[in-house]
Length: 308
Image (cartoon, helix red, strand yellow):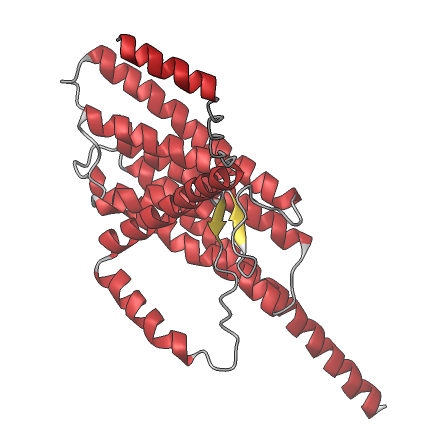
């Protein structure tokens, strides 16, 4: 009887441990949602009459940047512990829509267009604000469409395939697009845009990020990096240096990383198109040599030259 009781207790402890392992990835997803919620609240707090909107906007950007590691860790932990589930996948997608869709679109709109001074031409200011609101909505729709396509695609292939030993995303992932928006705001320490030409550049940047998310271009995923190998010490020193550099110069480092990642996808697409056109370009044959002139033609030409 004691053996049966001990066996029952052991199985119950294993079941509890298993439930706790399933809960662990969801905790990181909850942290992702919390960061997105905090970012939204800070964005709306910048609209108050406290005289320092840049502080709230900077905190909103930092919250989105903090959510990116949470989003990458929940999936890795679920795969490492073999606790993937349909519930976790759906929760992760909903969290990404909030944190990397709604939060950055609101941040991009408030930071880039709401604080434009009234001294600007009223017609120009109104057109810029309307275009900004529209493109920020396109950013949100592009992110939601990107997540929906990712959920239904089993083995997506980019239009410009890369090296077979590497794994790629099809289209710019929504955390990277949100990171581009947040890193730009953090680069300027949250100080909102007050020049009309900067606002126009911001419209183009947000629209480009929305297009890259729904595109079929390849972006490096980094999934081939394996931290569970036997000797991970080779990555320890570079990761520690990168972490220190990011913590010390966060605004510059994160902004450069976001730009490099975005332009890497654009460069990969342009290089593939150029090489493909070069491969498909037909080889132009050399023109055939002119037929030899007959003796009569030569005599006629000599006679004609003599008359001239």
